[in-house]
Length: 275
Image (cartoon, rainbow, N blue to C red; front, side, top):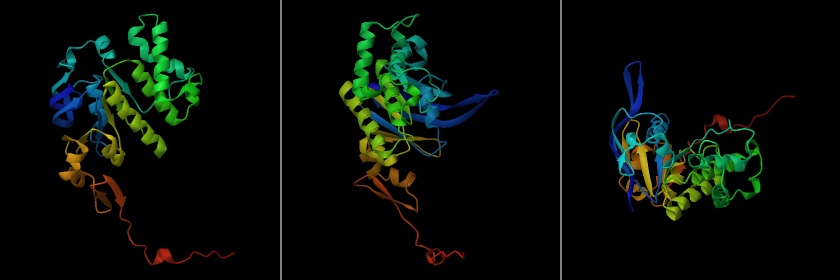
């Protein structure tokens, strides 16, 4: 197993009007090939910012990202398109294309200026469709798909791009719980069976702790804590950064439960309405 991405004292954020706004600072972590890593943390801690920085959509403020053995900023856009793919949550803007055609867009780094698909490209597209299990909607208009089918199609598009690294920004958002589990297990399988390096942000912490190989936790203080689910559960990290007075955490099962307050006396009075 090899390291695919290494963060060295990485600081992320934005430069506006000559000033820097730091979101996360001095992060050190490693993404290994063949593993699923989940990026968790409260809203506003910079999960999407970190993903955009790793995808080279925006520059780092400081530090270094070593990507497949060399600094990320030494790659051209064309080289990155064959090495890293990203799946965003908002794909509702895609219209007037079939599911098959959307997945075919993942082959664009290899099809040249005219974007013509060869038989080899079509073969890869068909394999990706089968891999994520959406054969029945392959010729259906993309905008008519359910949220779960749409997310699977976008993951198939990322697989069709044939990159060793896949980044996903909340791919389970808005999905029915069984569909969330299905997407998570599919991504874990992609990492383990195909040797992909997969990093995904997610708000379903209990799912992340049960399925992921590794966890990256962004804290409200702007730091990154990383480790296996077992490590972060046993050393108290999850309890310190997730559990509150209304939430209990079962360390052995890696699940959360809610502590409900007792009903007030007034709420137990039956409601009657005069007619």
